[in-house]
Amino acid sequence: MAKTVAIIGAGSSGLAAIKCCLDEGLNPTCFEKSDDIGGLWRYTENVEDRRASLYNGVITNASKEMMCYTDYPMPEDFPTYLHNSKVLEYLRLYAEHFNLLPFIQFKTEVCFVAKSPCFSKTGQWEITIEKNGVKKKTCFDAVLVCNGHHVDPYLPLESFPGIDDFKGRYIHSRFYKKYEDYCGKTVLVVGIGNSAGDIAVGISGVAKQVYVSTRQGTWVLSRLFYDGLPIDMTLTTRFGFWISSSLPAGLLHRLQVKQMNGWFDHANYGLQPEEVSFLKEPMVNDHLPSQILYGAIRIKPNIQKFTESSVIFEDGSIVDGLDEVIFATGYSISFPFLDDSIINLKGNNVTLYKNVFPPHHEKSTLAFLGLVQPLGSLFPASELQARWATRIFKGDAKLPPVAKMEAHIKKLIEHKRKCFGAGRNHTLQTFFIEYMDEVAVEIGIRPNIMHLLLTDPRLAVKVFFGPCTPYQYRLTGPGKWSGARNAILTQWTRTINPARTRVVLKSMESTSLIRRLFVLCGLTSAIFIGFYCLKYKTLRPQCSFKLFT
Image 1 (cartoon, rainbow, N blue to C red):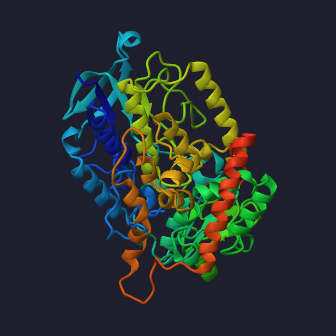
Image 2 (image 1 turned 90 degrees about the horizontal axis):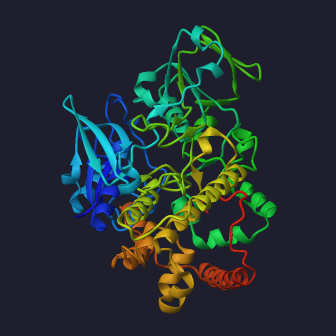
């Protein structure tokens, strides 16, 4: 009889989990508290309890080819970057195509997850659910937790003296919905992440004045790169990853700081990070620099204190007549249905082997999906996690000994601190290709460039020099997809065609002589670096300032 798997949440990770269970011959049951799929990507007018909330008009930071699932490309007519409604449409298409909806129990809340009395022998879990006011306990062979980490708002009011005296309104960004609510008002946005940037830009078109307070600053990227191509597709390449791995850390750091300032000088806009040696997740925002130039947004330092109607900053400057404050201060990871003995949270840090498995349970039948922030899209990362976890549940793969997992976790924590700093918002951050390959190795699906070069040179060039799109993880091994090769060869066509609403006499396929020479030189360099690294065993990447790895 097929093993039963409980899946908590029907968002992007939960849907991938259902499909992976079915692919491995497991019997999944997904519990979703709301009445629909989509999780974070389903916009609602009101904030729903224990469900991620989305503000109106969100546009993805990742392009569609980089954020799709590994065996299901987005429709060609979808734009390169998607409105949240298009992401939800894609998730509905995915669920329909793979017939996932029959495995979801809607309006069903998971109240408690506990080890069964015979856990040490069977690895089973007792799940207590509630539907229509009736509680029920059921036993499952394994559990996949897919409830996300954008539910419990982090709002450290004790860090903002005088906030209790402030007579205006203040909210966490979780409760922000529409920019029209701020028409004609003076607004302060606290924070410098992607949500802070989107909200500040959205409000700035109707507000009297918008201020953004930041302690450390941030790098800001446009979604477009050279030739107007998506920045993530241009920079997230294996070739770039190899080069950054071989350059001296100091040189790599200087080059990438220069690259970050290539669009505009961040210091002149008050945005340059105070500690540039750490790679905080960059803000992706096409309009923030322009709004600063217009004077619609003003960047301010950290807050010293609030008064009844004003805010005083650490540089002594004061903003009077303040009407609204929006705290875009992030979220805390939480699992209200799990006891601390199951998963221990310290300082927003989760102790998991490769961000998926708790290392100390007798049986490897509990896994967490989506608890990672790659410098890229979460969709393919959480899907790879699900493919790995379901193979563990099935018995086709095994985890290493506890001591080895603990050593890996400790090493990873130090690695993250060196790269990203020790902030609470950086505990889940990682490099995209590095993390994807790390999980892919566990499944046996990491692309072998040298083998491709010998058997399919055209594909090898695309895989190595082109964007590291999710399809690369369906070329070989368990779950191999026959359409992966064609998806890689046609990925730029699907990217560019939606924008070609007026046909001009220029083909995306035409490549300049200089670019061809660059590719040839790059291929030669890559082969040299590859053999050099194999000879001297120096392939492990340095951690300096890699952007999209």
